[in-house]
Image 1: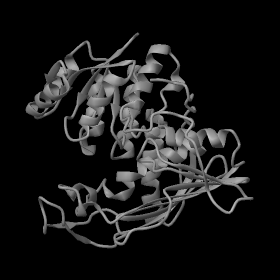
Image 2 (image 1 turned 120 degrees about the vertical axis):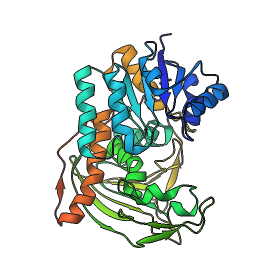
Image 3 (image 1 turned 30 degrees about the vertical axis):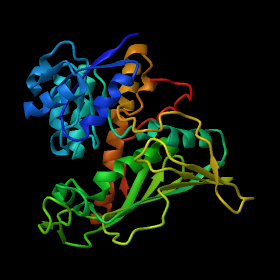
Image 4 (image 1 turned 135 degrees about the vertical axis):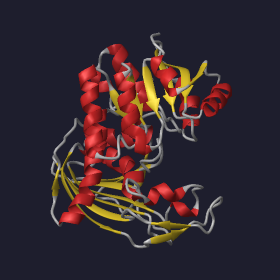
Length: 365
């Protein structure tokens, strides 16, 4: 069976999941890893049996590497993706695609010029939880989608993360941290977004770290920590999305619900691949569980890379679902909420994307 050879740049915490999963996908073979701290690459190579531990420059120069997964920090996502593409390799990057819209467009332009694919996390929407919901909507279980709600509500990363400062700097905040999961899921379920509006707030201008190793240190907040948005989709559905680091006592709100002309659908946490799917019909007083129709319900990070490889090998471009156009559309919408709040006007989306093709329940990547 044909395999695409994969290298990884960035050997931090998140790399372990990719390195564990990639050998399990039929069309992928992990052959190299790199980090600006080569000792980290060497440690990961030994831990996961990877043939080559490289500098970044060595990995990009290796002719056997076909796809490079970019797991660097968000501030350099764009620069590293462009390096990868200019080296003649397909690129897949952790979310978000880039920090700014200008950087995101530059990545897409370079990929197009070089004739290469660009992909981006999250790929959780390819998992069994959300794909079951995609199929239920497609098969008419709730009729025509009319509206949706989505909530990511918590008390902030300073309570648990060892280095939480980034989440309160420009380019951070709840929308840019967790928004990609929710917005990508909504686009997978409802299609592309026409316009957005929103209101933002900084509820606590200063945060005190309560996690180890920096307990007691102060963080000055430079980005909105509560973002309430409304999205108008091209299919006519209207959604409400709230992301917040300011909810100190928790919430009982659902992750995502889709409301149709003939029923309502409770969608599992878009940060996960699996989860419980519930349906409520107008004749019922309760939501009822629906068995998952699709597989990939564990921590299957790298599923989007496997789908990219399938597209490259088979020539079926629709298989590349976690693609750059989708990631850029999500990036633009996230900025759009902030822009709308600042301007007091709707933000009309300039980009669009294809609604990702539904996964075949029998597909094995």
